[in-house]
Length: 301
Picture 1: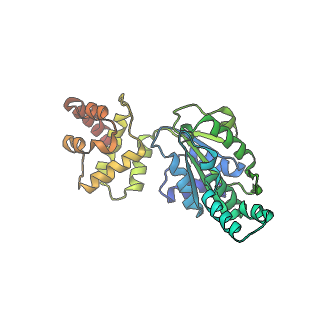
Picture 2: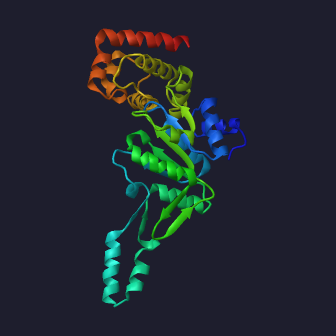
Picture 3: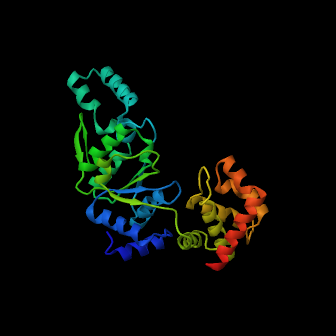
């Protein structure tokens, strides 16, 4: 727990995560209120990184559940090791064990595979701080969303063969969504909600400097302004902050100190992931115009 929003914001910055006060506030409130933190925004704006940063700050394990279509309880919660159970049953039969011995020893904790949700409950029940990341919940089916709603309400898991596992110290839960579909209001109501937008010029420049401290200042400003210009274009997928950092890293690796049309064409695949977007951006007249505007912005800010 952090004593104040300012202390939390400083701790995030120490971990090289630049967060405006509004984001630091909802993270602080989620911890104080012991509620899940629900983060929505475009891909690559830093939603997942919030959970990773919190885990580093608290020196806590990060348990990640990556959502996808068809995700079921067996993958997310727990699953019995049927192969090991069958082998154990054969051994009991060979030793002529009675029926009661077989039944009592077959469904035990030794044969249970804990999946991410159960792992988070178990570790929290032991009193260890734990960060649970439910990543891209919008990719999962609505049925799984309903199941998750029940789990987050009580932070307990009932296993018919073993009983109920419950924790009085809920894990820190971060749920992310790229908003490819709407999430049900019932889930959002149980969370502290925040939308993470693309960063301003000043914030993205601060992120670049924090993540790539050896970048030349002029190059950092040019890249920040150029990426900002791209986000105003009608691209299929605008570059996120993650692509910005990757691009700066690539430019440093190529010993670049400033953007040029040639280097942008050569490295466009680092920030743009669709060929139509690349063709639009690297068109000679458009590329020169965007580069000129971004250079003016970089020099004036």
